[in-house]
Structure formats: structure tokens, C-alpha cells
Amino acid sequence: MRLMTASEASRNFASVLDRAEHGETIVITRGGRRLALIGPAPVANGGEFADALTAFRARHPEDDATYEDDVLGSRDLLTQDDPWND
Image 1 (cartoon, rainbow, N blue to C red):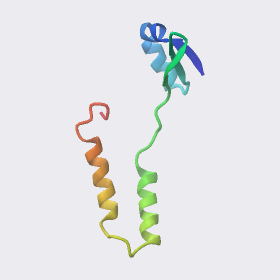
Image 2 (cartoon, helix red, strand yellow):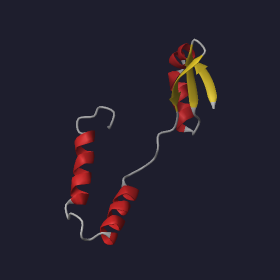
Image 3 (cartoon, rainbow, N blue to C red):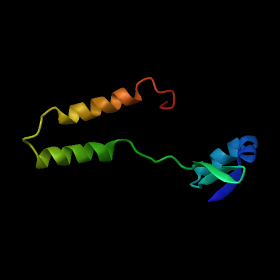
């Protein structure tokens, strides 16, 4: 884990992103206090979530048949028009 001041991170933002892309976590400080963490984003395509829903339905067939659709629909609503989700 690397420490960087906010000013240093601002001046070298491309480098900060490169480090995060390669698995490093950077702690951003301001005035000697920890302000933020920048690190690699979790990699997920929803497959594990879909598998969990399938396993749940296999164990609990008596539950609402639209449960999976409701959960997936909620996810779609939460990510709709999200400029960070491109």
C-alpha cells in the first residue's frame, strides 16, 4: 500500500490509475489524514450472483417464483443512467 498526498495524486493521476490497474492500493492523504483509497476494482460479471439465485431457488422452490426477476430488475434500476457504469 502506497501513501500519496492529494496534491501528488492529482499531479500524477494517470500513474495512480496504472498502479491500481496492476493491483496496488493507494492511500490518499490530506493534511496528514487518510482521505481516500484508490485500488483495483473488483472483477465480476454477475455470474456468481446468478449462480446463488439458481441455488436458492433449487433449495426453496416454494418461494415466490418471481424472486430472481425482482432481484435482477432491482439491479437494473440501480445501474440505470449511471455515468460511472459505462
